Amino acid sequence: MKKYTLLVFLAFSPLFLLSQDNDRQSKLYFNEAIEAFNAKEYDNALQYYDEAINLNPSYIKAFYNRGNTQLQLKNFNAALSNFEKVITLDGSHAKGHLYKGYSLMQLKKYDQAISSYNQALKIDPSLNKAYANRASTYMKLKDYEQALTDYNLVIKNNPESYSAFYNRALCYMKIKKYKESAEDFGQCINIKPGKYKLYMNRGKAYLKSEQYENAITDFSKVLTKDATNKDALYYRGYSKMLTNDFAGANDDFASTIVIDPEHAPALKNKSICSFSLKKYDEAINDYTALMKLKGADPSSIVNRGIAKLKTDDFQGAADDFSHAIEMDKEFAAAYFNRANANLKLKKNEDACSDIRQAAKLGMKEALQHINSLCN
Image (tube, rainbow, N blue to C red; front, side):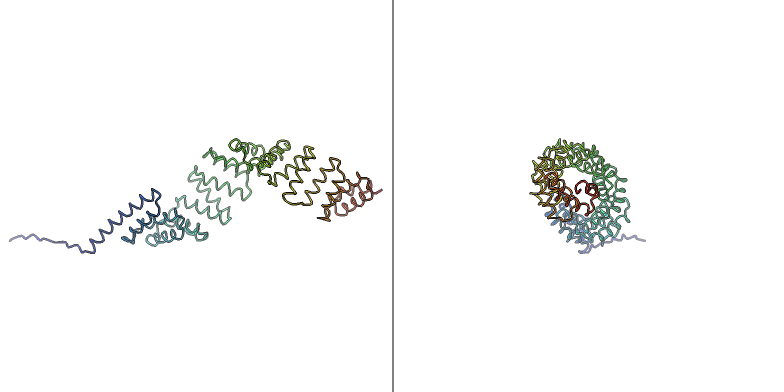
């Protein structure tokens, strides 16, 4: 019996051959896109990804990368569309959900962004960037406690995460946990010791937590790098003032004003320091400059008047107190101090009238002086 060899001819359809050609060409475009992206030629990269997707409409990596390219160009709606396509093709694509969330966050659709991050973490609980981005979104919603929970997880997974420590420090500042904020800024300094901005931030946290000497040290550190940093000068001065170092504070406020003559808080606090140092003429000048800048207010006028009393300018003081009373007829301190000025001017009846009015307005100290002034 003869054996016959059966020859089987496999005929490839033109459609199948075309599909293979498309896949190969699509991958070539994909690789060209990656090269363009790495060279930061994002518009060219988009063109190559477009070509790749035209040839292979199910090319998940091309959609994903095109979305990331759109993010680089801040085309967040276009990026969102690409990541949604990734998820349509593969619902378990964790990073597709992650960057969909990021796109939504940039579009200020915060609740939707959080839902996307939740989905990403449901698929891949180790996706640290999803915790970090969700925390950032909670911060934008001013939900600092939830943000802290996520930043704690980020730091647990990556103890060297500068951005997590930095943002957690900001959250602590927002909820007035200043000591914890200072500690986190300290961690940032350990990770990036050359960033002098961090000393400024930690100094403010120290100031808020009443660790004044530490605050002074940090602000001084900033000033070794930038001697004309008006914020560091001002806050160092303020910290010194709170430790009763009025001379040091006065110098720092003066330096702040040289840099920025319209720095109202520096003018205000310098006037307080000048008065405390018994530099009354300087205090008068400071209050005058402050009022010229910000406009006259009853408190500043009275304070200037008290400084004038100290220089024996009794009429000038009385005029200031009268001006304050014109602005606020229930300002007890203005009546009380005008009584003192009138007494020095030997206007005893006016002094009696003023001290009675101060007492009537509830000033206990005035009650103690009625008998001595009015009898």
